[in-house]
Image (cartoon, rainbow, N blue to C red):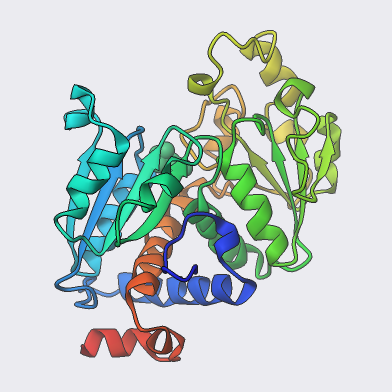
Length: 318
Ligand code: CP
């Protein structure tokens, strides 16, 4: 993590950091399978989840993760807060910072807003998704799910398909996967994968959906209507679904499918595939909570304790 022990972009994490967090997530998954699912590790700590943009999975799993670690968790949504009266991001952060939280988990529709917010607080800040920029904990939970399902990350080939242009999931995922030695492709219509949009990421790019044949894992991206405006990025959703929608008809034996949710069924993924038990969508959601527990624990703990092999026993005994 960065010197301030915040998590703003997935590039803040080295390969060792990612491995440590995934290992820690596995230990938390063991604890979550016990009768008593709560550990006292973050008792007395305060976590504020501040969501300026809608969320089901990220908001719920961060709340549950904090509570399972016994932290005091406060949830603030833009809707119903003073943001609706015109309060600025800076004033909102300064206000919440005055309560001396240990962690601020922030989601915002604007790229860069979470990094900007971090300037106004001494708390550790976690980026829970900033516009089309980054979603580092989604990348971590995706790696966690892949490592658990496929048994490895090194040498795996993951193809992200669809609305790459607006996707923080694809950007953070590509960086994280390559850090761990995996290969990444972006496959999309030209309007959703314009020249330069993948520049610097080192991924393969293609406009041809047939190229998913080379991938071990096909990652269907949500068509992000809320970021498209009147853009006319595709002639119609029906045409997009026909040309790039992922269904059983496109997959070869053994290929696995991921989706970060929420899904547009019948657009980027067929109904049948979304409900197929081999799809990893629910496993991703399950991984989200334990990975977010790992991130919160890692941010607020002595790095030496985190490296200890028996960290969960230590926590339970605390
Ligand atoms: N994948 C994801 O970030 O989902 P939410 O928008 O529901 O949090």
